[in-house]
Structure formats: structure tokens, C-alpha cells
Amino acid sequence: MDKPFGLLAELTYRCPLSCAYCSNPLNLADYTNELSTEEWQRVLTEAQELGVLQCHLSGGEPLVRRDLARIVATASELGMYTNLVTSAIGLSRRRAEELRAAGLDHVQISIQADEPTLSDRIARTPSFARKIEAARTVKEMGWPLTVNVVLHRQNIDRVTAILRLAEELGAGRVELANTQYYGWGLRNRGALLPSRAQLERAETVVRAARQRLAGRMDVLYVLPDYYSLYPKPCMGGWAARQLTVAPNGDALPCPAAQALPFPRASVRDDSLSQIWSESPLFQSFRGTDWMPDPCRSCDRREIDFGGCRCQAFQLTGDAARTDPVCHLSPDHGIVADAVRAANNEQRSTDLALVPRPHRAR
Amino acid sequence: MRSTKPMRADRGTVEGSSRPRLAPHVRLRFDRARAQHVLLGPEAVVVLNGTGADILGLCDGQRTVAQIEAELAGRYDRVADGEVQQFLARLVAKRCVEVSDG
Image 1 (tube, chains in turn green, blue):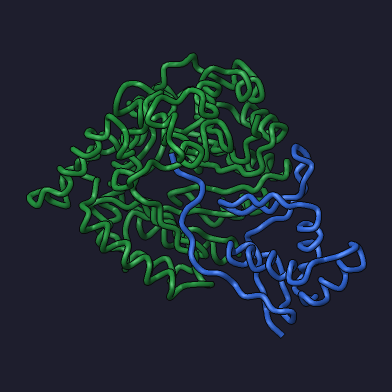
Image 2 (cartoon, one colour):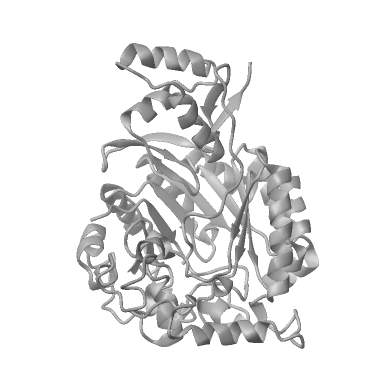
């Protein structure tokens, strides 16, 4: 059996921002009983024994946890590469110094757009100015910085200016990640899914920027799978390379796997290694034996692994079906309908969004 | 969710006179679970074979590629021509290694 390389540690789903594209689950109230510091330290130790080398500290907003530096210190002492995935709200100089001392290796800051009005409108809170200040602090302290921007119908036309901002901030990498439609993002899909013309313009800008910035800034562009012919190789294969632990201790093969109809796998009940090797949730879609056609007989089955099980479940109610993003899927009409609606010329680019709440209500 | 291999572009060039070093955001570690050396970055994990780990262990920003090749020739029976350069060029393209020239 493969050993996982990466752990996505979702420390909390509390967040000062309310971005409508958030992939956190809708039922935030089910995650308020968060793992304690000691429980996270045990999870990290078990993860390291299992083979995990990278720890992505995420959420929600991980800085909401006052014990973040202690958790980072543990991961760092275990030899893991530690990456903070943050909105940067709460990343004061003092906390940055604390995290630096704890051994944090890398910081990824999300920005919602290139300028305050749109960025704050998407985040639904005044946050742009603080993000810029925090990004400067990160650079001053000598950390490598990744700027992450989730792209969608309401900001994708600003990719040129977004790239310029990332360059000004001295980011070593910029991630332009088209929205993935899970959780709140799926709920807001109609207002978020860009048109084909928007995507083509953005891709032209990205290609030119890569040439211009080669060797200075890495430009990662995550394609929107709704417009792809084939699905993405979700997580590099189910329970093969990565795992997620949610704020309440649920262990997940994909961050969107909470709703799948399997018994919960919780680090509060079992060790990570038992969960990884034995739990039905992790075992069910390993390899290719579970596949129905068209995946079963497809020569891409080891390339994209049938796509995302959670997307198949969300869109069809059956996690074992081919990801409907694939043009060969019998359910592809679901995705084709959403794409058709996004390309209706009457559809505006600033439709109302349902905000993700800051915390469970 | 996210696939782990996003699209990527440029390739680096590595000459005999280049002085390679690990990029500042990258860590070289020994992974006990797999009993192999690995290079770690924010997205990438590169699992190294013994030769790869030895090459990177010599990438201190002082030694040139030619000097690294000479040192390895003393340790191994044979190091194929251009092997070190090709290995480092791949890592430069992944932004795991940086080179300064001359």
C-alpha cells in the first residue's frame, strides 16, 4: 500500500472571511468540537510514522487557533515541511515571529482580487490592506511566499493585474486556482462559473506571464475541471498520496469526502495508520477494481483515477460513478448544463453570492 | 480535489561552471518511513535515489558542477557523462535548485 506524502491539517473552520467560493462543508456546526493541541500533536506524530513529509496547516483560518505555533513546532520537530495556508488576517508581526521560531517553512496567502474594493467585496470584510501588509511582513522575514487567488466569474477578468500585484509583493509562486465546486462553492456555482471566453482570455494572459516571469516567479494555473475533457486526478489517486484531517478529527481521503456514505473515520477513535490501511472510507476507492465503465475499460484509468469521488457523489448521489466532468461519463449532461448556463450571454458577472458564515450559527 | 501536478513551463540550463545550491524554500531530508532522501517544497516532494542525494549534498553554492562530478567519480565506479547536469537541470526546472554561473 502507498504511504501518504502530505497531510492537510484543517485546524478550524472558523474564518474572518466569508468567501462564497469556500470549499468547506455547509454544515459547519458539525465541526465545532475541535481537536486539542495535544490531539493534533498526536495526529502529527502518527502521520510522520505513516510517511507524511509535508504538513499544510489550513482551515478555515488556522491563525484563529492560538496554539498554531505549538502545532507548527511539533510538525517541524518531526521533520515535516510546514506550509501555512492563510487569509493573513491575524498574521501580526508578533505572530509571524512566533511561527518563524517554531520552524514554519512556507507561507501561502490568499488574496481575492488585485484591488481593495473587489477583494473586500468577495471576502465580505475589509481585509485587502491587511493582507498586503502581512505579505510584506512575510517577505521581510525571509519566508518564501506563495500568493493564492481563487479565480471565478467575478475576478477572472483581472488576471493581468493580479499577476502584477503578486510580482510587486515578491511572491516566488502565484497560484491561480479556478474554483473547485465543493461546499459553499458548489452552492454558489451559478454565480462563480466563468464563461469560456473569460477562461480563454485568462489562459492567454497566463501563457504570456509565464514567459515573461520565467525563473523569477512560478505561475501555477489550476484548470477549471468543468471545462476539461477529462477529470482531474483527484488527490493523485484515492488514499494514495494525501490525507486530510478535519477540525473535529475526521480523517478524509479528499477534503470534500465528509458526506460520503461510509462510517466516519476519526482520529479520536483510531490511529491514523489503522484509518489509512483499514477504514472503509479509505479502502473503498483505492486502485481500479471499484471502477464502473467507462472508467474500467478506459486507458486513462491510471492517469485520472476516474476523477473525484466526492464530485461524483455531490452531482449524482453515487460516489462510485465516473466523475461527471469527464465527457465520457453517462452523467456528463449535469456538467454540460452548468457550462451552458455560464455561457448564456445574458448572464451577468456579478450575480449575488451566498456568503459562507464566519462560524457555525 | 486539487490535483497534485499543476502545469509548468520553463527549463533551466546547467553548465559545468555553474555553482548549484538548493533553493531557499526547499529542504533536503532523510525520510525514515521510506528509508530514502527526499526534497521537500510547498507542493513538490521529490524522492531521491542514493546518487541524487549525494549530488544534492554537494550543492553548496561553492562547488561547480564539474567539481561535483569529479568528487562523485571518486565515490562511484562510473558516473555517466552529463548525468549530474541533467539531474540538476530537472531540479532547476522544478525550482528546487538554483545556479549561479562563473
